Image 1 (tube, chains in turn purple, brown):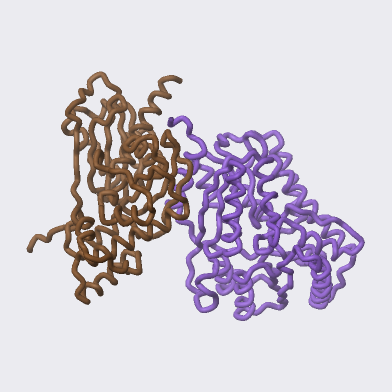
Image 2 (cartoon, chains in turn orange, cyan; image 1 turned 90 degrees about the vertical axis):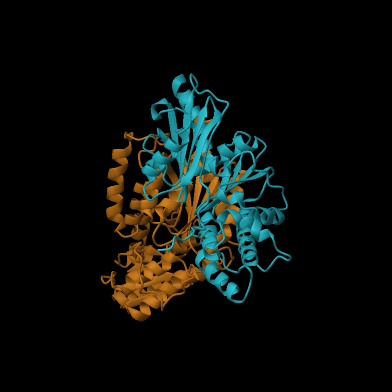
Length: 347
Length: 291
């Protein structure tokens, strides 16, 4: 089952014996989406739709999305219109997660969704199935948090680029398999000191971001990403499901109360204290705020986040993505940013 | 074939201090290979000794060599006499004789600090193909910066295109644009190509050259103002880069910002990047010796 946004309750799919696969772009220029999606929508949603129109996800039996923003929803609706799938679902995830009715509403949406999945597969999803899915997913999240803890070291045993690869793999593989590999990796990293200087400790935050080329470029300039706030990063796995009698209500609570995407982070901006805490615990020297061009939710949050970080004495660099990254243009900004936060030697 | 005047061609320059005997002094240099122009600055014991400012060719290492050779021309120096060189600008990693590359953002802040004094807090570098607003502390260390995005508006390259279109030497563009009775409406597009199309239309309507130039300089100042508004302007405020020599843009910008722009007459504002690089070269050499 292809899914568009990390607000999709994967546990329910996993319990039904379905493998959730996140839809991502290819970072190649393309010319197929122009008639189907606005040019002022973010490059990521256009890139994702292009993959569908080009039949690069032909192996999918189903496609779904949970409401997050209009841009990615347009990619979803256009995809199912032009490349129909066997099972399609628009899950009505509330945008106002801070509403007192959000938990109840989402739990009922899940009941409908569960029934639809059961009708499609012809197999009942039992509480046992859900418990197992919750267990596997929670373990996965816990292992990832352990991996992130290793990045608190003075010389982190793993780079930000590598972690980005791990999170992307995590969004496409069976979590049970991923858990095995993570345990293996954690064991290996336990006593490992890398043969590279950590340099400045950076955090990256913002829109969907799977741009490993950018991460690699920055980490070769004398810096290391020690943590992040991306839906292709920590935001995806930070919170666990707290098991309860009503499994669907427990899962709903997890998605309502998780570290929010800025499209849902209102009226109170709950992400800001979380980001400040990450900076503190991971001892961050500077923050790169990376956003997809035209991503309104992130752009609206940028001013408040920049101010909060500035007040905490943490410098920020704001960059805007497109489908392909102009490496030269980004490089000079990043180099100058690193010179700004370090390089006392020059004076 | 009739030889065509190259109106866009700005005056290249070279200067050597008549008062300095470099022998026995610490010689460092900075080379700024930009997208449009290249500069080399030579310091003797941290004092400005010689510089050159010329057009960048298609080959960065070659441009760097040409710039440093021209700067050394009247000094009696050889390349080996220079103890430390820092490269900066787009071609900063392509300066063959340099020991280190540093971004032009850091270098313009440091160079601006030297040229205009330690009270400078905001430096606007208006270069050939981009422009940067930089905040710095009293040492000339960057505290914040902002660059324009993916667009040549507000840059020297745009001005070259206009000089060529109107057949006015680029050195005269600024003064000519101020020679008007009433400020015209700015051209609506600052995209160089579209602005050129718009200007062609204005000429066809019968606008004189100075009025068209005024409309373009004013659009450029306005465009830069939007960049400055995002980062804020703290006094003292100085401009570096080639556009600093264009009074048409500077005067209009000063009016929009409402803050006095420091006078540029003592130094060629185009050398700020190379000057900062040469100052860093001195610091790096001295730090290296201490180790």
